[in-house]
Length: 577
Image 1 (spheres, rainbow, N blue to C red):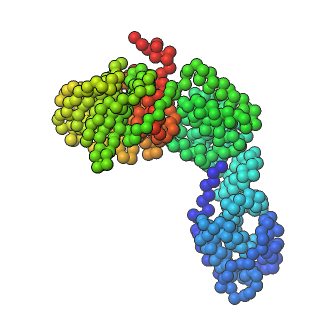
Image 2 (cartoon, rainbow, N blue to C red; image 1 turned 135 degrees about the vertical axis):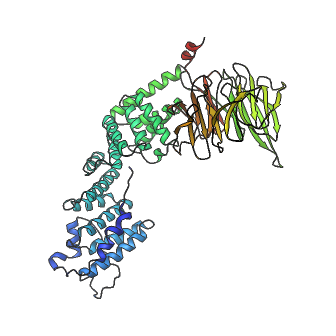
Image 3 (tube, rainbow, N blue to C red; image 1 turned 120 degrees about the vertical axis):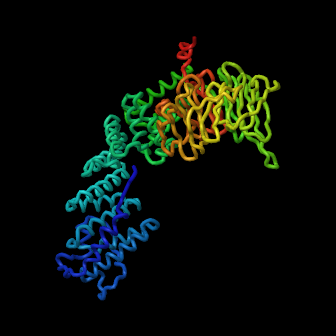
């Protein structure tokens, strides 16, 4: 469970000004002051007596003899705590205990509450949850301030979570005066999940999203809760919202570690929603072996049965994969039937001179071809044309056409004419997207670059660009962001979150659909910017491409080319003319 404490930021405001003002108070009576031991007994804590830090007091007693001196001692001790808080938590805790020894029930309540909350936090950071609960119990009887109670119950709940008392922890969170708090509700949701109540967990996650919209922890938690509650379609939609908010899945580093096996479920669920059924099966089998909650165990076995059925029926989205030992791959293509793959790699010699080399792979024979090499040029886009094996390549200087089925076949070349800078091939491979010197995007036929049609004005610093097959929408990236543009209105449809950055873009040849290569996979995005599917990859997607038939998507990640089925076979057969 995560903890969001704000005490250090407000301690100087809450404590030091008040402590500095305590110079005119009369010396408290013995009944009020009490001894160090009696105060510990009242507080309910078990603290080893420590000598108070040095102060300017004139007396030599173990404790300051006047309220003024005590306040000065408290102030000095708090300053030491603040200096040590981040780096020496055990020492800071000792000072905090000393400061509490100096306190008296007659002292300002704000000082006493703040110090005790700080001490509770330090107990937690020093892995002493029982001391957190003991000190919290001593405060519950007299603390009335709502903000203080919020912090008090939050820390008590965190300590109970540490002790694996899940229900008590949840009930303590539910005692927090302010339930309209993201941290409170997300922790309540996770505790409901741990207790095995996925329905209430989903309700709590939804409420937490009212206060923390687009929070990945809540989105992925809600997705898994919905799936466990028997709502897989809704779970998929929420999961994709989570991918957009956290494409690197950093949430797995912060949550879902309890009870044993839960992390395996969350990883398996991510693999399942990411269309990696074999990996999902591996993690879900580990989870099912450890799962003790009956409903969750039944859900895991049902999901495993579904995965096995899909794998046996050949319905897995991931069709196959191939190792690719090339480095610095700049572009890739896949033929209509997925038999041939092509890659454009940039190679450098000892003199640091670069050459673009096009390789093709026949997936039926496993035989690679070194199609052609182009010294001094950078190939930045490839595409197969229709159902043929003709491969087209685009560089800043020339257009090339090759036959991927015959590596010995001559290829033809013609120069890029005019002032336009080629940007990309259209989805069909029969048109070229280019930019004019004044940053106007144009499209022209492959064989006639002068017959350009203007499409839109674009930023001059774009690094990647693709246009939909109907020429109505474009996706482009700059150095810092990914955007979706409407070519008719010349307006931005959507700017994706900064963390949602496309390292590669492909446009579907038949539908208004884009594939974006992300840090941990590829996503499909429609013309409205909505995510429709996710394909988890071994690492960052270097490049990707749709087959001209629209049936397949090829991704390259961690030297592995993977072929994904975009359409089920029966759906493709129905659409054939």
